[in-house]
Image (tube, rainbow, N blue to C red; front, side, top):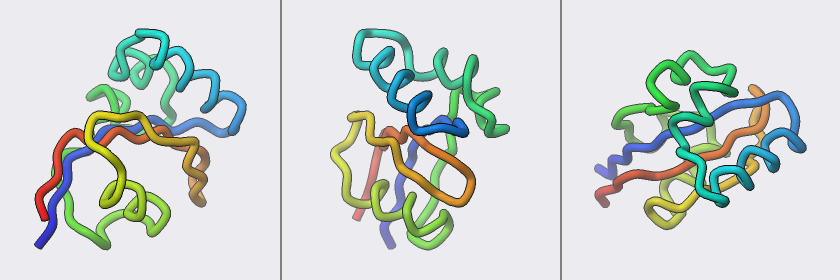
Amino acid sequence: MAQATARHLLVDSEEKCKELKQQILDGKDFAEVAKANSSCPSSAQGGDLGSFGPGQMVPEFDKVVFSAPINEVQGPVKTQFGYHLLEVTSRTD
């Protein structure tokens, strides 16, 4: 079964999400941006979600995590929780 590890950050607006993505693309550390801005409890670990398989996250999240390039920031991804930036750190098929 496929497994992935990923990190993310969660904010309540698409604008804020885009602003944070630009900061990361401009060289800021993803983990530091997540710690400072994410409303998810995973922010304490720099947004690290650990390892998980398909179906363990909401569908919008799964779709990105199991198709996006590794180590490339994706988003904004809208879910029922808000707007996410995602970075897949590893994946096995």
